Image (tube, rainbow, N blue to C red; front, side, top):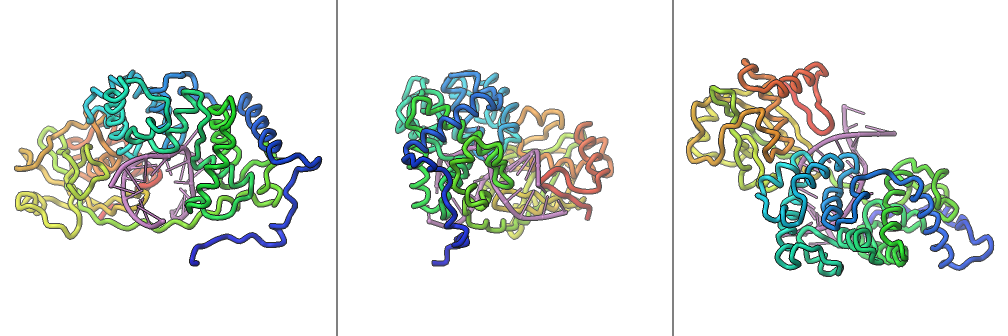
Length: 404
DNA sequence: GATCCGTGGCG
DNA sequence: TCGCCAAGGAT
């Protein structure tokens, strides 16, 4: 009974639920909302590259990239990815490192690894052709209930529902549904309503219209109800506080992780990069500087390099569930450390490698604070570092840095 | 069912 | 400045 629920003020909650001015049954309300959504979507939908194709593979790629990621962010990645991997077979036969390289900067890198495995699954089990059957789609690595419904409805015109964050928000508002959508009962209710919406000859378009509405008008804060095609049928709007829905539980604070990053550079201004340590699965398959978690013993050879290094500052990198406080140290080395997988990499080669943002953040900090930046950073890294120095501190968004 | 996984934009 | 959160899925 400790669940937090935002009980509506009873007096407010009793407000009349709009419409039935002429007493139409609920099925007519559903039809009316669907028609209004379709008419609005047909006119106002945003242009997106994956809306110019019916290739199920392309739509699959777009749906995976769009998981927890905004449309504007995805577009350039999508175009580059499809240009490089034009088919299921091309993706399946690629090296994982190349797939991750094209995913660099997009985040949630497990999506890329699963998509790669998914392509191998489709090649082996379905001869490279995406299956239509929702259950067969669900069996593909990285494809869950949402993505299976999206591919089935958008690529194959099947009457399958989708439920993502947008649809969840739109539906809880339309029916003024209480309870955290993460709870099973509420979730089942929402899937059921989503299914009723998708039971239509234009299911794929309706699904996209629901998502588009949530992304453009029915936004989390300050929704633009006056412009909404479904405003007269929306119960949250009738109540007067649409942004009260959905009733999500507050999020927990991210844990703090303390790390030391050891930036090793050789005489040619190359920087050592290697696989992340075993206790850092988050960037598995990608390349990072030497990273040591606080409290964990280092090998003798690393300890030696660590003693020979000097501190040059710290950076903070914020992720969804963790906040990394990273002490950055640098050391000059003539040869790669023994018994360490990895290599010295030229700064201008980073763009073709599988590099997470944290690598760029650490290298930029090291380049900026190095006593001889001309030898340890590329022109672009110096530019980034100096522009950050001019601003005085934080780079965009989630990362801050400071001198020690 | 709870936790974990990246990054960028915005109010 | 900082918290919120986005076309989720796997474990």
